[in-house]
Image (cartoon, rainbow, N blue to C red; front, side, top):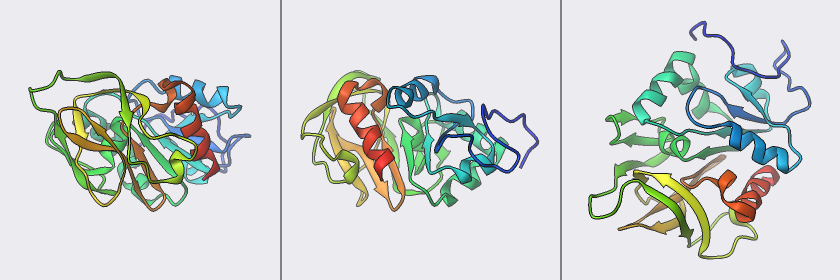
Length: 212
């Protein structure tokens, strides 16, 4: 582990959480404040941290990401989080790029992923407008993560790359082709869409994650 400056907002030397059970991994990728605010609206004070002790002590972990895959993976490696994240035992939710980095690989920057989800991330073809930006529906839902969410519910997405279907697909979306908009493997969950920007349905998904 490199001796990088800790980006934890609230942690004790023992790694215990100061009144929070949700940690958002803060590795320098993406607009994570919006996720923190979304949990705040649910009455949860999620903290931002890259401290392995704090992350491992959390009841729930959010692995966010907005940006370019190879750059994000480089930041994870610089802090040793590339080794830590796949070993986590509590429920983990990857959002957008976070979900893609949990896959085996991504065509973006020819990036090797963390290998939690056994699928690959591909770029949308030029037959559709790239990136996909805006509202689209999720369907074929099959996880407690979607308890109370109706089929063909709208979610907000911004992405140029998609995860191919595999046995771990728990939601699907159509955009030029049919792809995995959510994945699950054991305690790891991933969503391509942004629940923190997806109105009441997105908030319900975050509530469901807290209840896992």
